[in-house]
Image (cartoon, rainbow, N blue to C red; front, top):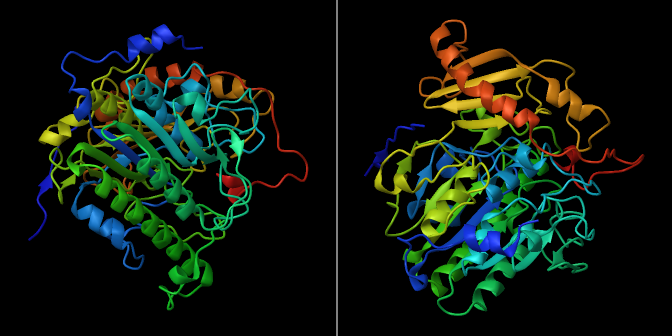
Length: 488
């Protein structure tokens, strides 16, 4: 039987006292013993077309295939074009430029998620949730610098993480930290190690304690290492590197399947929301340029759909209809207000929250946004550095002034360049008619262009002035990033 589709219209530091106030339960909150649990699974560089139910004809993902049948398939789920900004967007519900997360963060960089930012884990922990983060972090430059924040500083009572990629590869990594202490060399593959830690934490939780678990896999970001049993699944692939990439996704799928199996055995599934997604589009400038953006233009590091539209699955039995699809535009920024709503706590009232509560989609309704979906990435590979989506319409814009090349460091004078640039040279697309962004309507639709410009200009100027200036930092001579393509 063909799937029924849901077509929705988009309308579009901290003191203890402050934490207590922002985390105070709302009047209509559910009782503590029935507050839902949350599991947020984030892959690294997984493209929109890298899974069978999003279009891949080759990659095997049996556990995610089964999970998809239990879930709502999110056809228009968005990240940012780049790793660290996406993670800040998810944790805070705020544009990463507000926190000074302008680009991916290299090992050794002074950039980190400021203590003044309030994460969803901080809010939920203050409301009585157990909180855990396992896997990649990538919101600091060093795990061992007390001046830089770690997952423990942003609400996670237990954490097991790497600064960026698993080094030297996904096999036998040496750079994990657990609750602030280096773990040392480990034996095994990153996906399994991350899933094992999450499972061990789940199995030691007090019965009935609501929890929030973030599982941020390293796969399929380079440097890729894939176990032989998964490589053998792709004997007819033309290149060993391609088989390694495909097998790496299957390896992640197996780890995800073990996690879901334990989760379902331990917890009532009708009271646990699980979100599965990715941090950006697929990398295409690497040793493994085999990720797929599906039907979309562009890839990681770009503001075309292929760089920011990512696979999304949402399972919440009893609340979200299984096996259906949703075309409502949603984003990582929406996670914080949504989980707050479900947990019966409030987002911070003393700052702008850019995401929106998406619980109305559970009942087949559109969500109401205070502001449109907006992206800014001054170091984008694409000529466009700013994007905005409102309904079916998407605007892209270039910036005036010197172009900032892709790089992890911040050099003297670059913040001034960023803060003086103006919007210019616009592209306009109707994503309902043209999801591949092939026909620029900026000239033929002047009224629509004017409407979109009126929306984007105040947001751009707000973001342009936001965020701290970090100490200038450049990669030392001879420095080699922890992963390829600058370890983005």
